[in-house]
Image 1 (cartoon, rainbow, N blue to C red):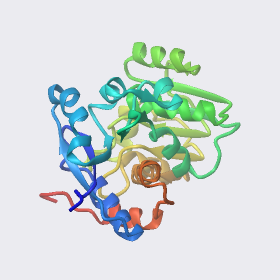
Image 2: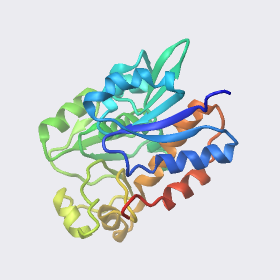
Image 3: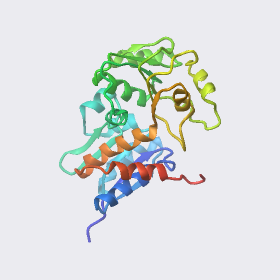
Length: 272
């Protein structure tokens, strides 16, 4: 009897991830008898565990915090996006070609955004891995200017210089603002307090605001932007679209976006 094929998401911690619910719903809708599981891997176990996954039936895995840089390092090959961003969130295993590292975070962000950022002035808040993917995506998609602001100026400057963006000493008005920090994720924080924490008070609300973090409802920063008339895009929508890109690369079938979105929205983590 053939072994059931597996997919998964590797992270530490990873029990809160909505990816298993989202991908298993999609696999069922596609009629594919695979199983997507959570893979809690501490950083010191990642490099030794990943090469052993194909022998256990894994076709591929998504990779989340804190392993996105390590995922690029363990791969035999990498897409141009993953190489230039310097991080991978998707690994695909092949008996013939080894492990391929890809980054669907950048494409997923643009898919979730919907409208092209071409010609827009964009401000990216944060300087971590997700900010690198956002800057890379917006720059390559034709934004007229991409600026990076972070409360640690050195990190923002280094990120901007490495990807052809500019460093913003202070937050600036923009056509599109992308939050890549965890500010605003706390459900008890007010929109005003979240804005103050990032130095956004006094700025005009951008026409479009995208928050890469997500919770049970709109984040405090989403509410801050929405209260000022912005069109907002939540992090859950980005999760759905980056997951859809990963799923399509593994199954070679068009992903059922609506099914994935409903499953992600309906997921209740343990203890919720």
